[in-house]
Length: 91
Image (cartoon, rainbow, N blue to C red):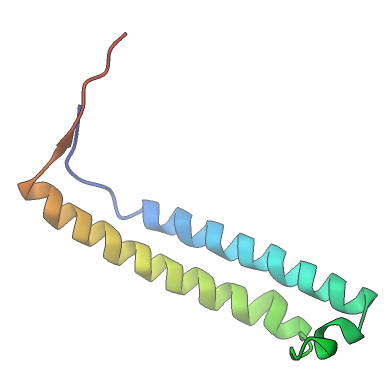
């Protein structure tokens, strides 16, 4: 079996996963802030806002990770043309 080419649509799924993980992180930050408002300020961190925690940061992280994965897939496809990866599957 050989892996010569990765489809670029798989980068979309990585971007969605990054967006969801960052959304979960933002929700947990807001829950922590609401339960203990002094937690962030006592550690020298700014208080999280709902807009940034739930909208701005997840979208930015998702888009950046999507673009990063597109770049990695493109690099892999260029290298795999010359040096394809192959392995044997036994039953």
